[in-house]
Image 1 (cartoon, rainbow, N blue to C red):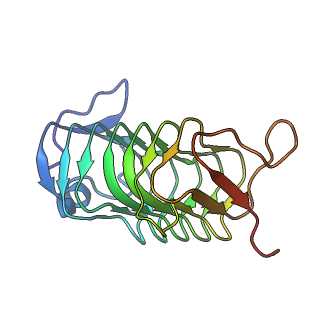
Image 2: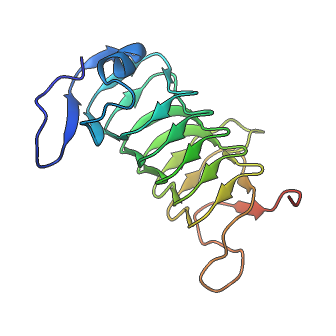
Image 3: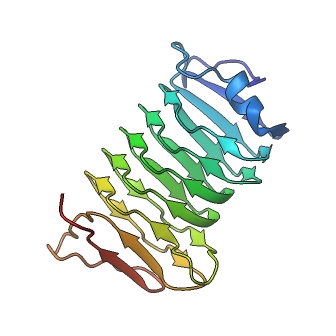
Length: 194
């Protein structure tokens, strides 16, 4: 169901402007498909929870201007290529124990919260321009024991509700300090040493 013709210059499969049940995303776009570098979904409404947990994702995923009803679960997934959401409404993004070798990017999105406990992110974690509408008393970004090897980008990220918190080993800013300029209140607090 991940229709559209493969375009040789971008080497990706595309799904545009449709409403699909969550299980169609994986059933129509086989995990680890050799000839596909990236799967692109544009203006797609995904009904239900997009469950990508415990999947080996050989190709990249790009969700552009999509609405995902009940959030995205990437827990325990191994992602070889970049997973990115641009201009989407996601609900929750769960990525506990994810291994993201090319990074995870959530740009200009609206979502309730992000959980990345024990995540291993080899490249960048980017939440730029996104709004986290978490419930009062809940963390906007939970990342206990999370490891990000490159950078954490929170530029223009807006937490609503209680102030946002991030836990885990946070990369140092260019000034060498562990401080980040964002809108709203954020703390980047290291958890126990490993």
